[in-house]
Structures are given as structure tokens and as C-alpha cells.
Length: 131
Image (cartoon, rainbow, N blue to C red; front, side, top):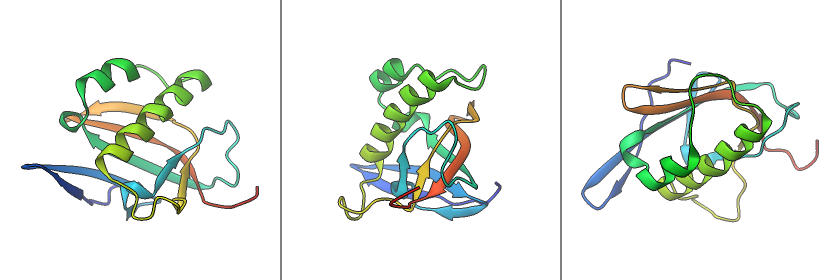
């Protein structure tokens, strides 16, 4: 996933840049939804979400307790998805709050801190009403 895409939002005088890539194709970060599934349904897509650490409230980072030492177990993934959903919703508001995003992030295969960015990768699904 090497596509270089920046989604930017101005907050006061600060510009927030982040990246959401699915199968190598840039997508808008506000189209990501976070629902853990040990066995993704339908799954089949790979994502990378990158968020600048400087854009995340330090108190949120403290509560989220992101740990890059190993892939998370189910409990940690659910906890991190809660906080990632919070972070993304604060930085990139949905264009239509009633609309589901086209991608549901199902799990976390890796979380790493790199170059001032929080980078999360895993498997995701296109939004479907039944699976």
C-alpha cells in the first residue's frame, strides 16, 4: 500500500493530514467505520490508516494505550477501534452522518508509530447490509 494520498482538514490555523488506503487506492478517512470481526465478513480488502500523532489529543492517546510491540488480541483491537473511531470522527466528519462508510475496518494486523504517524493496517470489508 504505497499510494500517497493526503486528506486534509483545517482546524483553526492547523492543517491535519492523514491517509486511508484500501487495496492501494486512496479513500477518504471519513469513509472508514470500525467494527471488529475475528472472521471478516465479507472481508477481502487490505487497508492502511495513517493519522498524525500531533493531531491526536494527548489525553486520547493516554486512554487508547496504543501498543506497537505485537498484533493486538481481540480485546485490544476492539478497544483500539473504539478510540480510532473517535479520533477519525473528530478529525474528518462524515459527509452525511446517516450514510455508512463504504469500508468497515474488521481487524488490526499491525499498529506502528513511524515518522510522527500512527499507522494501522488490517483487513476490511465493503459495506454490506447482510453478511
